[in-house]
Image (cartoon, rainbow, N blue to C red; front, side, top):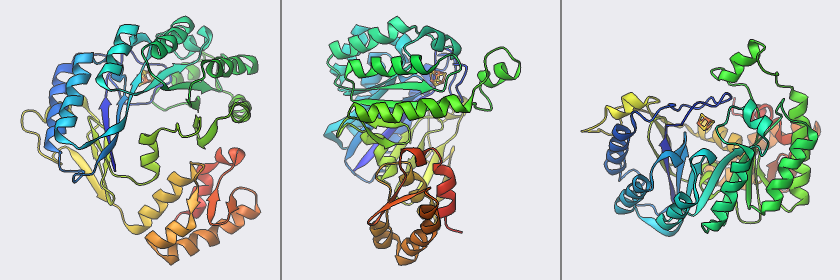
Length: 377
Ligand code: SF4
């Protein structure tokens, strides 16, 4: 089992809150696609023949690619990697790039899961975030996606917005529930150091973030998704039974994956590798890309693998499996973890059921602090 991630680093414009690496222009798209195709072919042995069960187009805005371009990439992947017949194929999309015709075309190409960046169904929020779509188009995209035959649809929503209030956040969730979608990713608005919003707030141009608003909205989110039959399976992710993102779950379960495109990471089970975070440098690979020539690699020690396991699994409802730790990493690691967990359990910051250590909804907000106390010294 393995996953493929393709990073498309272009957006129509930069959203105020965005801290991701993406270019607000399509000037380099042709050169980028050439380099991307070369990388897909050159690194065909990285997964050592493991069946590819998930393919994920992330960004940036992958839905800025034409149907022809996405079709060519999928064709190339299928020609060089053993893609399982029922593979989950996800494409991240922004509403301002979508039409019914485009969505129907994606479905025909075999894309079977959509992750749509709605962020809010209200215009005042969308304006605060400087998103390019409006509330009407947000809902229209969901209607089109269903009409095009997509059943596995996820949307992103942002909470803790200064432009919003309790009633509006509840209304956002009402609209999500009314669509009967199987998956929701909900994130608290955070200030990224390089984001436009951070400057706007410093200059007093827009309302500042209030942490209490985020805590209030998070509590509403956890309660209402549970009442509506959604499983809170990762800090920011909620799904109907069996509808979790299989691609993202592979990161938490240590499944190997290969990432194509600038800044994309790869993991072969023991070492991690990542590409340069610059489209220009990435494009310079063509015409003769050499494996590793513009990427960095680190081998993970057992202690680092333990820390990574603790961090990733604490973010999920599956939690830390002490039996797995003992079997895969040795008794010293499982004993260390269990011993360091005891004071956290006594303080109510961590929970334990049989051999599993996990965080409840309330505890999940403080995952980083708990994980740090379980890390290998
Ligand atoms: S669409 Fe997404 S990646 Fe692009 S600028 Fe907005 S938040 Fe960032």
